Image 1 (cartoon, helix red, strand yellow):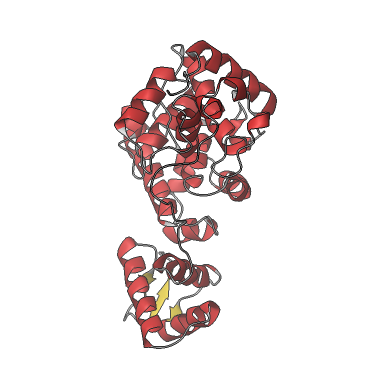
Image 2 (image 1 turned 180 degrees about the vertical axis):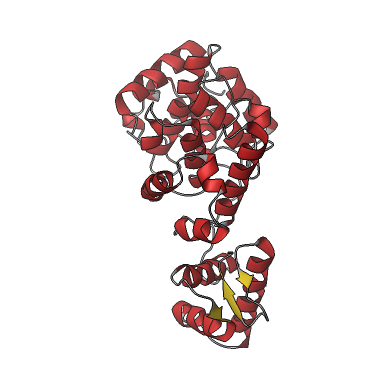
Length: 306
């Protein structure tokens, strides 16, 4: 028989009290941070560890503190400033969002969740997170950390489903406090608990404020009974090659001849042969299609977008 889920009121009190004592002092949590700064942090933190995001976020906000400032920047400068955060298309989408904010919302980030979802690169999670963390409004913020905490504490499962389900969304929504200010803190508090304590590997249950009411702990902390979960590959992937191509162009301020660019990337990756060259060509074509790289007149050299 499954262990009983903890009472909603107990969950709220335990998690909120824990967050008040243990929250990381991240710069975008400073009350003085603008809604735009919060939005930038959310886009940067997608699939990227917070430790890597923080220094880039600080430099970015110093350089482009407002949507108008970013909208006026060149795509090439934006991609270059993105550094090694990964998925550089996010940088271009963020600039496109800045342009949309200037053109459609008078340069001020909208507070309405549905309006936020109309911005380039903004999906359900980002819109909900910005609504809560930038504007203090009630929303349902569901990321991997939130899903894992609720799967364990409430449902007694070791891990959440491989992808977000409607049932998980309903569960998360049912636990968000009714008043807006508390709901906003609850959303970030559950996320923080999952990131720091209720981790996917090596959860520190002894440090968890929910240990004595957690359904998973009460059930004996059973292992995940779903299909094996494989880590995301990196070596030899198109993602690795695309990243290497962008990095070479980021390091220079002039167009790089195509043959030279290919040689440098293959050398850095320690690869050679026709198959490796074909992969580089394929990745370069996809970068051009995505607007992350552009050919010069004649197509003999490439550069970051002007």
